[in-house]
Length: 272
Image 1 (cartoon, rainbow, N blue to C red):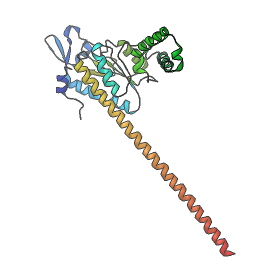
Image 2 (image 1 turned 90 degrees about the horizontal axis):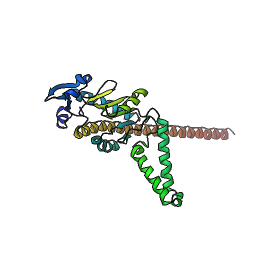
Image 3 (image 1 turned 180 degrees about the vertical axis):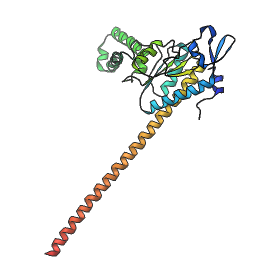
Image 4 (image 1 turned 120 degrees about the vertical axis):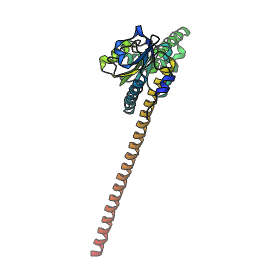
């Protein structure tokens, strides 16, 4: 069953591209027509591409790997934070930390420092600090939270990157490409789709369009996580059943040996 349809995408304004003079010729295969100087995206192709991306993201989530969402443009920040938070995936909605992927160990050190500050604030030594020191530490912690808080549990490089607006997030896209990390993206008519592994031709400026696409891919991720949980529970149940069968077999073997020994003792007594 398709995750979305032509009408739903149309209602959300996913089809509106940029002015013709701002277009990127590489997006020609995804453009349906030009109307009043504005390019209109072919929503039939969007449906197909969205389904491909959603299926791939579902499999990544099902395998237990992480997907990093990147959306630092104003109209996408809150939407991405809200939707992605529901599926427990990491996201960047403030500035992109340079070297986030290519210099990942350094980013992890910054996260660990942030966690150390949290321990300090909860510990007994916190009260011994002066008011000024507390204020400085608190302000620094707030800045760190803003940039790194949403990736605090990202202990290794993500398996994929999902980007809103490849033009604005070109540094993130470049880092992922250098490391061979698959890039999923909403790509508008003014952007270059080349080098993007999963292109979703769509309006990356309108909040309704962003919300719909992000919600649909997050639903796919949620499905993957649910299936992973079900399979794990099934494996745990099967493992428990195997253990129980093994225990019963061992118990039966022990009882049989005990019975054999008892019969042997009785036989020896009869012989006497």
